[in-house]
Length: 110
Image 1 (tube, rainbow, N blue to C red):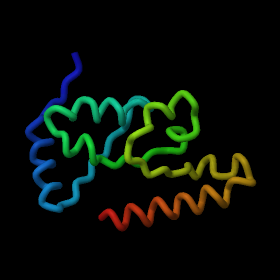
Image 2 (tube, rainbow, N blue to C red):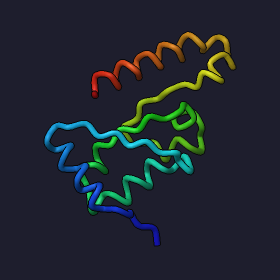
Image 3 (tube, one colour):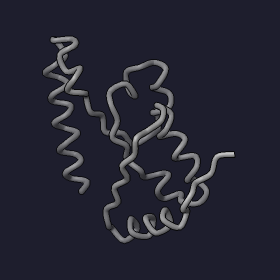
């Protein structure tokens, strides 16, 4: 029996987005399935947000086999955690470059 509270706020955000404004939502997610759940909860009342929302997510959402299915079909910008940057030294440079690309993309989106 999940529902979206304060639907009027999402409707206001949707109008702002349609007018070319930026809207940033910051949340502390509860599971790796959050992007899929959020999209499903908003698809009826706020389809523009549901279809166009861009998530910033840690690398687990694209690398972990259990998490990956929830991220597929979502607009994601992946950010590698500084804490785990050197877990596999051979991948550290690739992770830094990927983070730089994600930050540049965020700047362009704004």
